[in-house]
Image (cartoon, rainbow, N blue to C red; front, side, top):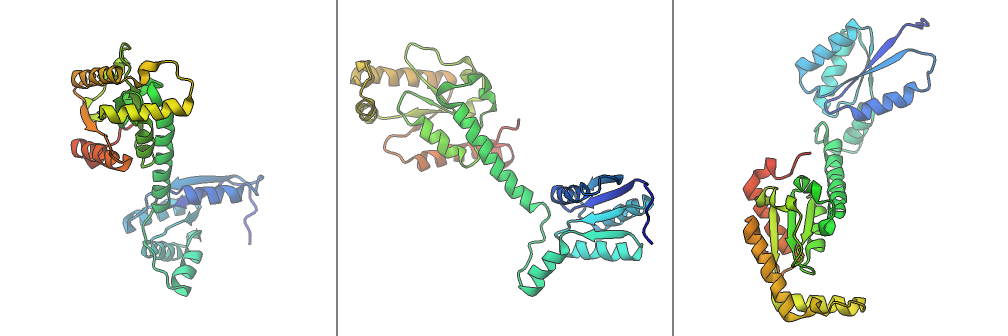
Length: 282
């Protein structure tokens, strides 16, 4: 006989990961029952038999319903068996499809909880890094420089922007600061950890050629000093002075591919801060 009372019913969403998927599925369903008092409680990180038994007891004491998205087949089987023994109502949100994939199609499972969200977390980290990098291009928002995993600095047309964007696609938040002779760089450049700051050196003739290409491409640059060899040389000397003042690591990028420079910088960051501390935590 159905229980038609209007008592509150607790639905426990149990997962070996964070349980976001199961919670979303349950919420999507219960919206179809607006007159019922259905409380959803999330119980994540259930990865041991002891934890399973603890959760089942909790659900039984509450006379609730246990739903689960256990991707580990052994843990899923154990949970279902124990629910049957203890007469706890359970709904398997993953097992039916998983069994078909594994048994009917012979595809093995990794049995790794939280893998979907781990992969997606990496994706969102890359997006966040790219957004940060674009918002901190060419000296923008220097007040947030401390949040950068990597800071690159140098004179105009030494490749700061393409290098920054390239590294950001791999999850690195990169800010780049232009150095202009006669204009002080932002004070934050000298306040952050110097081990995360890289000064880009470039051969004088190579830089002049890059600027000439830009000058021809734009066609309306009025500052002829932009491509003047003597003036450009003075800019490079000024940049080197600032590199030494800040104790920044100097990287020569002349005739070097972006990938090679990026690998050199990232390698130095990992060597200095290790795998666990290579990224700045907000």
